[in-house]
Image (tube, rainbow, N blue to C red):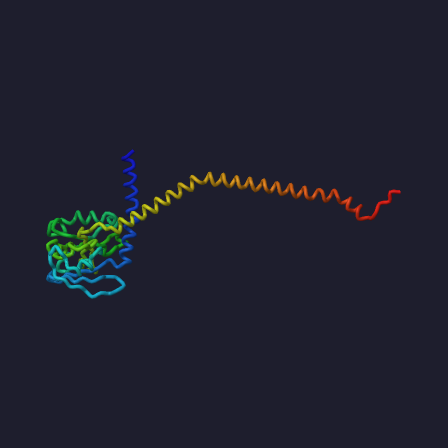
Length: 269
């Protein structure tokens, strides 16, 4: 019994997680929650600038430091936002893959499985990401861009940004044949906003469920009340018809008497 209830709660939580995640992303996009941090070529300075928002702000330049306490300005800019870290092109190892179109649904696993042949470094020493560059529908082939970033290159910049309250840190790796390839750093914090959205959705679902059950339970009572009201209306209608009939009968019976009374005195002789 307890295990079934726990499984039901877990299933409901997983079912709500999808819409909650989508709403969270929409809210963050609308609220200008994405900022761009660009690392200088020598890796000593980070320039931070909001990528969207109503009020444009001047870029913020900060020296790369592994201090546990970030500057107040950096914490204010990065709080709860997704940071896209732009890096120099010389830090990126660019690779290309030609794959059949049937591999599109398994692209993540295929790229990860081939990383040993694509990268000169071990997989534990790199971040990597991919992006589809071109699709040839006639040949049923696609070209995939793979960006490999050594962890040692971006370690200082990521450490500087990691001590902030940023929601997520992604690497925007420049690629020769496209503008960028997004590389995940797996640095993501749990967002309280998404939890609140899930709570609100669960509340709405619970209220809707209670309302539906109440409507189903009240339906027989509503039908009974309607039947009683209809019976009462029919009784009143029947009484009204009888009253009208009784009112019309005396007028018909007294008509000769009224005619006799209106003809003058009666001669008894």
